[in-house]
Image (cartoon, rainbow, N blue to C red):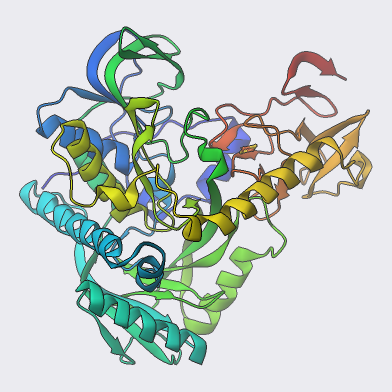
Length: 524
Ligand code: FES
């Protein structure tokens, strides 16, 4: 059996960052050590450079290599260190109650493309795991959407009709394993789940990956793409941007059509094992699935940077206690997902003026299946084979009825974040930040992010997001500063946690700081 091999992981950031990171590790991270790869130190020339060593990037490079294309992966940190390690790792074409909406927005033909691509993705995972004998806990299992209220039950009836029209095998049932009563559930047979990092580690063995190799710029020279990394350059015919949130703002303007959402997971020991995977369609509902000895309980979705509801882990813990009173918490972590305007991922050409750039992003909560769809689609596109389901995922699509309202909402959110940074004064002073609290404060005429630890030390960072300048918001749940515009996140000590920002916010010691745009300007 193939397994990811390795050695202890190297941490990122300082001691505080490491400590925090370990507390919030997923069960996948706790159980896996992936082989470390070299940093790129010499210039190389390849046919395709894939940016990002998550599931979509590794799979894309793997398929390209199988098709005879010389491809390398450039990963800024470690493989699987982004969202792949935080997924609940369901492989399913049941993406919430999406199919009736897809038929309404795009018509039956394109909705069928979406379903077919995801069916193929499940099959491709199964084939790959079997062929390569990868030990990654693959388990075929039914997936259920469930409803506790009448309104949700009606929605599921509608979704069942859409599934029927699209030829998806389904059944409406009330026969489920959850510890509470429901109105009804919609079941899709033969879906799957697995251990994402064990799978990733095994596939990555057949791919050339450079870790700790951040791409800091790209230029076109004689029809080739030249990627500048810290210590070397990569010249490529094609590039694939598989960095979760696309790292190049222009062209493509993905910052206008993507936002990020956070959600939370508990891994419970001593909770009844479930055969099926469950996802509630009503607001505030939970998701459930077993993973070995653990039951994964997920929920609490909200826009990154909007922490107005608060207490997401607390709510999950309350639910865990109610549903599984004998269970113990083995791990707690969060995930961050990119959401598109119309709910369908962007997979294809990055932007019309750049025919040799490709992108995959906006997988919503369905990263594993969408990663496989991306890898199949992009590898076929790059080799010129063409696919039968490309149109629905095209990043250049713009269906007015599907996108206009959300485009307007995105613009309003970004405008709010920018206005807050430049016009609205901070509400607090440093002395008003209590132990264990974080706030945006006014400090000698500047607006800063402040956090005071339990010992009383005050940490100060710039409150301005280095991506496009929106004001950061304090996230009390995870002690980070998060950007409501596009979802970049930073530790209170300043290091970058999540993109699209490409650098952290510089920081200083107690009662001093480095402004992100004025790194020489140290205030004491
Ligand atoms: Fe875009 Fe912060 S993530 S401005």
